[in-house]
Image (cartoon, rainbow, N blue to C red; front, side, top):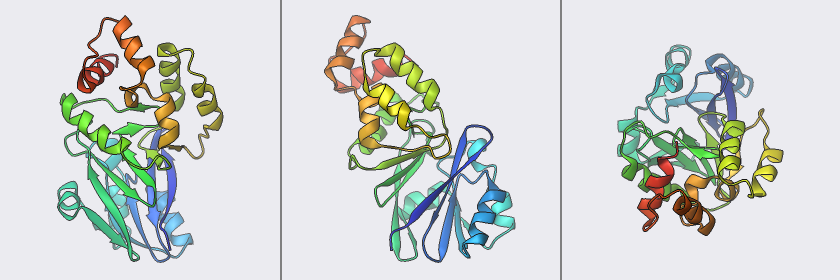
Length: 234
């Protein structure tokens, strides 16, 4: 049986997750600790693992409560990157190293679901706090090679703000209104196919984006040039 995912909102715009099967569960960025524990208890699940997409405090703030109130094991990023996978209820969750936002940023991928933390939001990529824009580019290239039906579950809900940015950059993109119509603050998700239609940071090879960057006087010769130019707009 495939694994499922449940989204939890906390601290206004943070989004945390429980990945679960028929018996076991893993909390990812579990800031909504009380709600997560209630969900797990109501479904008679065993909280097996606690993990994070990266080490920023707004994503790790629920770890202590979850660990103190369960028998879960904490899986730090180093351990996850060494293992490369997490097995739960006979199913495999892949761990993708996606440095850029932070050096320890990771994504979890399973059953056409991507829990992307602050590497990729719905509508925009994260900020490059490491300063390593080139490494971030490789991380994004890894993500956009995933199947287009992949559902992207991000670390924050910034959809309205980022679609406003996209509209200001590309006012004739009719896909943006369609994207906003599908936006549901109770369950924030979009497919990678939808992201590729509206997120300019994923469309560094799109002729319209290239023309926009060129009109701004920004470098566009290579993919990396275009990526760097887009990141300069943040």
